[in-house]
Image (cartoon, rainbow, N blue to C red; front, side, top):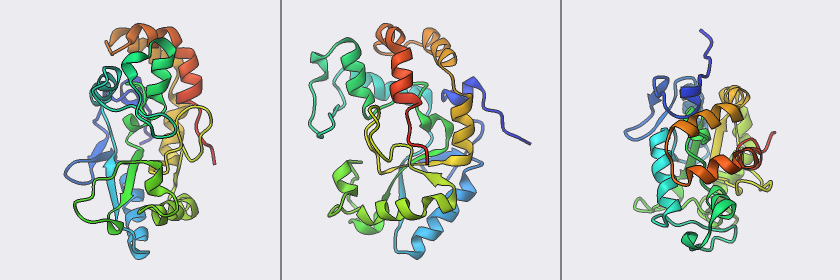
Length: 227
């Protein structure tokens, strides 16, 4: 039966379609077979794919968002320099956070189609990936993984929505997306739907978010790299 993305699903408030892929991570059930094929293909080339983040609920995203708004989690600029977020206000504050973190209700991770990944074979068992661009650049431990994804991800129906910086979200070479389902979710996602959710669900900086939402929606939510 065809899957129809609802507003509850798209904004991370319905996990009924998710399936566990390990002890800590879930993906949409339609994504799991493709993910397993991807893992096997990478293993054949010496890459041990590990997941840092996959499906994420609205509540989880809201906690991340609030911690960043309050300065309890680091916020970085494009040069990977830590910002004092408490010195910023209004749109400038929102844009600083959204360079690397999505609004609650607007994260692609709500769909179960997205994965933040690294290569466990390239580092020691106690290594904690930072999801920093330098790790995936030439000379970094995950450069081989990054090159592999550039060359082969499409064969397994995955792509990198933040492959290049396009004036919104920073380049994220660790973020892959299952294209067939993510494309459906993107098409079903709308500004009015997100406005309704955020008007009725308290989040940090709610008033400023709603004031600037049309601009944020265009720059950070629909502005992805299309292969």
